[in-house]
Picture 1: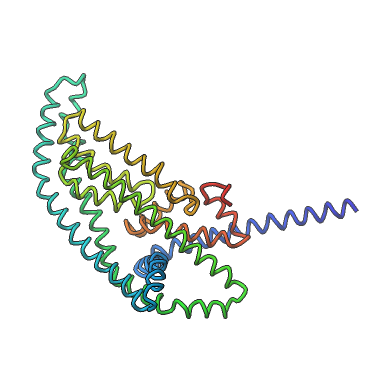
Picture 2: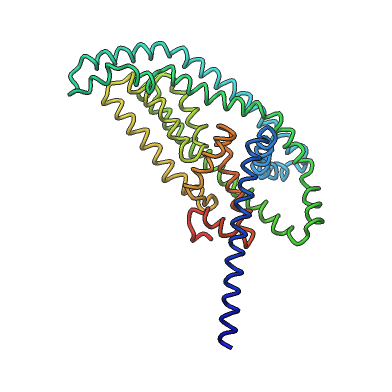
Length: 361
């Protein structure tokens, strides 16, 4: 009897191992297919992904407005019109700020050459030889490179805005088929309808929590940074442009705030005295750490729950295939992917590995 029980246990163990291997292989294959699709179907999938995320984002606002006016056409029309008008004025405003910064680039370049000549002639215990070679200075601190950086970021965001027509078309069809999709899914998969509804509800809640926390923290960090580098503080050229870039780039998890801080710091070391530049650097780092390490985790809480390593890999992957827009929307996409994986017993271990804290499972 004991031998039979042992044989049964060994067979069950082998079946469990084989099942896990099959699940892992299936996840790997799906991952490769998804990556290839992201690369080769970018003109279709990126606007569709943005449209889905926008739907999750505007739905709570639409429901609130619908509860007040009682007309879904008016509620959706109000939300979409507000979004389109906001994007239009933001684009014009960013262009104006970039033009103002470009006009100040020659003055920054002249100050850089003046400071480099001064340090070359100073006694810096052998370090003055670094400033005598202008190659590394031109690479790291050249105002023209900072200008190119700002142009590249705004150009990517401009391409992102340019795809809004396709995004709005997808979003319009999603809104029109909002109720019919649910009915068709319930008819086709009656046993999975409850699970699908839970995924959609959790996605809306998680995306809303993510966006609210990011808007709050990005706005707060950008305002403090703008004050620090403004004429009230250290008077860095292009201060308002860099404040806006800080707000936009902070939507890229982990790396965004760092990228937004580098340009004003470089200009600070060019325009300011060393002690003042170091003080400004300390204030900017303190601002970044306060919002990134203290404020944002308390706002987002367990709703985000994604491992920092998974977020970093997601940002790198989506930025490689979709650029800046991909880096911004990558985090919401991985949140939805984790919710989907968590609803299936076979893929739940993958969702657990993606989590930031096992206790929340």
